[in-house]
Structures are given as C-alpha cells and as structure tokens.
Image (cartoon, rainbow, N blue to C red):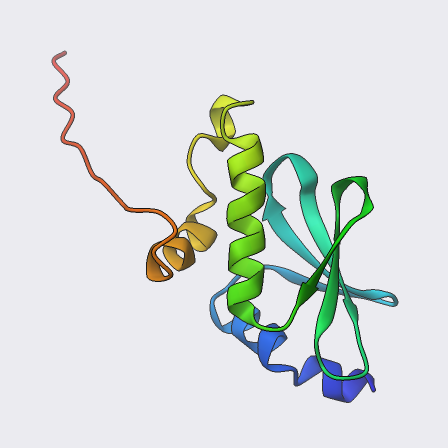
Length: 113
C-alpha cells in the first residue's frame, strides 16, 4: 500500500508544487496551516485521505484542490489573530488565486530615506 500512497496524485502534486510533505508511519504531514501548523493526511484504501488538523478536526480529501480549500479555511480562521498570518503562505496563496478563493493585489509603496 505504501508504494501506491507515494504515487498518489495528491502527494505528487504537493511535491511538484514544492509544498513540504513529510512521510510518517501513520501518513503524511503537510505544513503551512497557520494556527493549526500542519495537517496529517491519513491514507484510505480508495486512494483518498482523511486530513487531521487542530482539535482533531477531520476532513475528507479527495483531490489536491480539497487541500487548498482546507488551507483557505484555516487561513480564514487565523488571519486576524497574528500579523504573521495576514497573508496566506505563499505556495498556498498561488493555489488559492488559481481557484478564485483570493485575489492578489499589489500596491506600490514609496519610501524616502
């Protein structure tokens, strides 16, 4: 089963997008989930996962986009709690923009010294 998990499309997309994935004996750990810190992906027999996050919240993950939506949800919970979480983590932000969950707006800031 481990070989099938490593070749799983969701895991391959995380690696391809350079989002850190750590293999553990009970699944995969994905970083960048703000106050929660990380989620653990527990593999299911059908090739999907159960995401375990803070307070043992469990979410079904059937695609990479499901993970992006979960990250967006956790960012929404966290963004007003810490200055460091005002913006989504950059690698996740790119995917949130792709799915239309957030818009990227750049501002020109002028500094005088």
